[in-house]
Length: 347
Ligand SMILES: [Zn+2]
Ligand SMILES: [Zn+2]
Image (cartoon, rainbow, N blue to C red; front, side):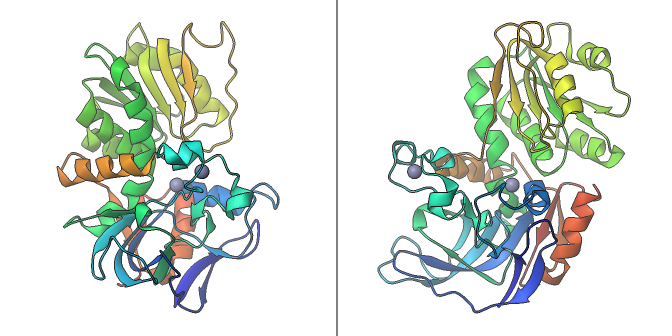
């Protein structure tokens, strides 16, 4: 089968031909229908060897929708032909966090687990087929379009998890700021719109992304270039934003985020831009919470899929074929993808 594999640190992935994997006991083989390309994949490609405890090579793709092609010995709970979405953060299943359903913060290290999950250290969905180690990582898709559904497993799940934790704070006279309206940001705007009465202010460097933000439900969309903290604060309201989601998280955006957040509000460090946020009295308003979300839980992915099936959230997707994936990553790096780049191996 074909697979887009990450073979050498600090280099582009390669499209290669490898043996189709066979599912072991308890495992499931999927024929991949769609796989989203995430900005965090670019960081995996950029960071020097030793930053991540991953063994190379592995197949990229941690946002996967597929059709069950075969079951391993003693696997039960899904049927061949069923269409599913993959939860790609694979924990140990037995530590306290995992038993609470919080596999996103499994207590065992990625080195012990052989990676963070499918497409993040272990073989993911940018291939014709993918093996998923347990049916507990599969969510039935029903009649959802796989291209629209694949990015739900990270681009929607991660902001959903962060927003859900803040729900009691989200009151009608509050506001939210979303910085960076890419794959995650455009889902964050829609999830806020679906779950809260907040006034939503979106910020991005690209005019296309601002249009996407308005379509997604933002009340106001501001061009980031030259935007001062005072201008953002004026748009948000004097009290500041109840919730700020920084989907970029570079030094400059974190500075904007810190200036926008309200006393008692929450600042979410969502992106993997590597910026530093100084936390001290005077640097952030009093009673501010800083959160660094990572993924969500498998149960929250069920909720996200329910939101999508209800028509409340929708992925803006640009489609690519499998042999175009390496080039699509380059377009993503250059900021040329609007919404999510999604690869469809069967096309
Ligand atoms: Zn991701
Ligand atoms: Zn665990």
